[in-house]
Every structure is written in structure tokens, then in C-alpha cells.
Image: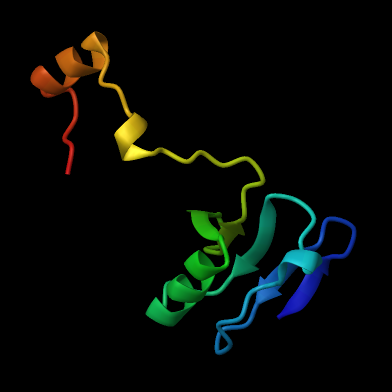
Length: 95
């Protein structure tokens, strides 16, 4: 892994090394670019709070560690009438 942008602290991931930057190496939401979807890389990313977001025009995966996050506690979830209607009308599928 090498640094692409020292000011913004964005790293280029190695193809054969599944490590990610540590928290003290991160500055903003975009943390790294590159790598692949190897299962070990995905596991390492999720364990460190990083998520693949999109693939750019050069076929690089962008890895993010969002500073703002949402936690949804199932016991606190309330189904609104409008959401219930959307589900009933099959506006999307809940799996």
C-alpha cells in the first residue's frame, strides 16, 4: 500500500496485500483506491469499518470509512403508514 495523496491521506491498495490503512492514517471518508473483491479483503475492510463504494472509470474500487454513520436498532424501529403502503404495493423487496 502506498500513499496517493499525502494531503488527503488516500492510499493505493496492493493487489496481493489485503491490509487497509489504520484509523490514525485516515483523514476523510475516502480512505483507499484499488484492490479487488477478494473475500479476505472484504472481511478486512468490514472489520475495520471500510466499505467499497463504487468503481471509477479506471476500474478502481473506492474504499470509504464514513465518519457519519447510522445505527438502526430493530427494537426501536417503527413502521410508518407510508412505508407500510410502499411495502404492501410491492414498491421494493425486503429480504
